[in-house]
Length: 75
Image (tube, rainbow, N blue to C red; front, side, top):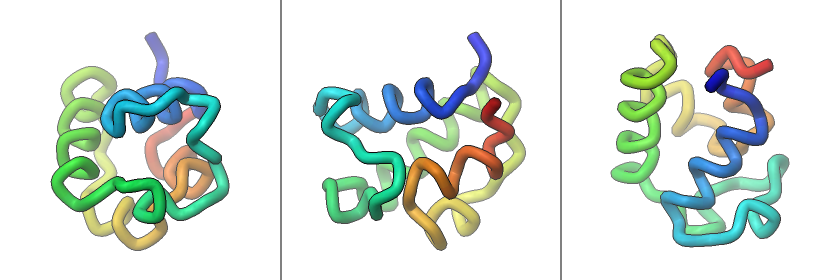
């Protein structure tokens, strides 16, 4: 399965134990409970499953799904 904006949102929601509909794509994910450990876990998952080359600093700098999508090569 390709990494898409919807997949990123679903993975973040799963990591937080939330419904994807409750995770806005344009808001700071730290405000929704995403911490550095969870960002690293998501990044490792995406590297393993999708061959993503982004690094932690890129994601931590702007923790919003819409900011991550281009960094993660999402369609």
